[in-house]
Amino acid sequence: MIPLRMKFGPWACVCVVALVLLSPSVVLAQTSRHATELLAKQVAYKTQLDARAFGEPLHLVSRENEGRLEGDVYAELDQPVARVFAVLGSVDAVCAMLFLHLNVRSCQASRSNRGAQLTLSVGPKQTGSGPGTYSMTYAMQVDATDNDYLGVKLSAPSGPLSTRDYAIVIEATPLDAERTFLHFGYAYTYGSLAKMAMGLYLATAGRTKIGFTAVGTGGDGQPQYVQGERGSLERNVMRNYLALKAYTAVQIGTPGAQMESRLRAWFALAERHAAQLHELDLDQYLKEKHTDLARMGVPAQ
Image (cartoon, rainbow, N blue to C red; front, side):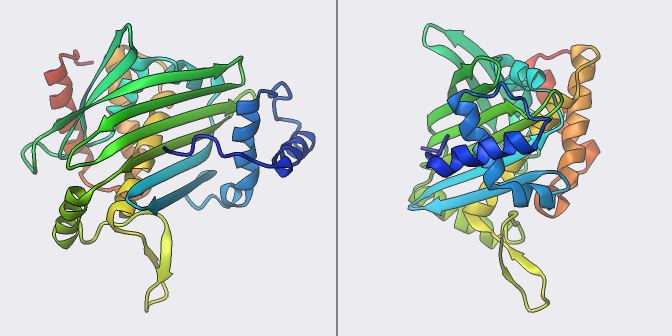
């Protein structure tokens, strides 16, 4: 399972109390256990967040252990927590948010006596440029604590090429009236078939693809970045985080106009990390997404 909330010792409580005392902007009503544990991550990663290596207060960590890949983004988001909660508490909004990812070709939300679900159709970034799409159905669970914490977990038992145990976790808690501390996690387990497919991909089209974690220094003194499955995971968890950031940034206009603005916002955010995330130009990306929306029966703006 992806580590939703690590257990902390007494030092975490001391650090969080210190943070509250030293930062008047922090909402003092944040007393729930889940909010306290999430804010402890902000304290733990304060140096990385303040460094703004990604151009914003954001820290990305990833791990690979015995076929299990896990990636987590922690970020201070310039959006009020009520806006973030409104997105995370709605399966329809989460669906529309994840659709911004260039490999998500459709998303359908549903509800039943078993709870909320969303079905993602995932495929190549351009129609006809690779294998066909495949569908994954995620169960959605929402965990809320008063007004200071909301957590969402999406889980799917299986995916393509022998992958399994997918988990997407999103947690949010307020920092002040206009800012939210966010955790976006993504994890899955892969088997021999997926490892073989990734090896083939890395020997061909993916041989220059990189992630965000520096794993060494080249002969030219420049950092060398993680590749392979872990690099792919890092790119995807970042793309999903940027989808949430783009989605919450657009709040006015007709539904069609909002979708168009969110697509453009997601693309602009991704291009800030072009070395890792650039795949298409803007016109190509919009053309693919407009085609997908038409296929889904979503009216144009």
